[in-house]
Image (tube, rainbow, N blue to C red; front, side, top):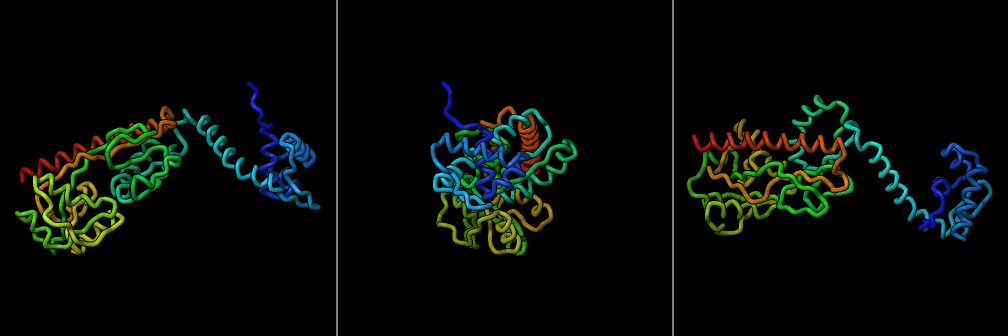
Length: 309
């Protein structure tokens, strides 16, 4: 069945003229004569049966019908352009790629590893797009995304990246070492992440205990600020060990209790189903999963060392 759609050339001429409000400028931008552009627009107006422009001397103004067409047409042309761009670059290992991640995970775990990637794949440009929680992730912007949680994620292929170990940490000025009774931790302000308010309850439950009282303490929207608050002695925090390993190694933070909690949720690499099979996306996905394997092994060795100590 033949689709009743005007020619692409006429639609591009209309959009250029509508944005510039000038047939002269639109013709120059499209590298064509003004008369040729005028014929395309006249053909489009004949096709839709309505005037799309008011001709006022050297300028043109959109009619109500023209404004409606521009609002509807522009995003569809952009989407079509993006589709053909993806098609042209599908098997190209170089170019740009967008990774979605949380700010602190991006700066502390991903960014140091991207330096190695740049040496391995110098033709690849990696852009990072951050979000504070999974609901804020824009699936239309990312080629790959790192999220923490539980599958499934509709519209994505999900691969396990690494588990998450939660530990209780404090400044050495607040605690000289681990306490014996976890309930004693609640004598101090309980620092909390705004999007993960159940961390304290999950950590206690993994000990076979029920959190005796609701934790009281300030809330933070980013792990970076939460880590700083713990380091400066504002209270005790339950944090992913991989995010505070640097502070633990430098003595800026100490374990407030020896227990390590591994929740059921974990970190996953998500690939939009529409991006599967694209060469550079698949290569970067494989690289990320290798980094996850290495991190899991490093965490395993840290936990073994902790038990030996």
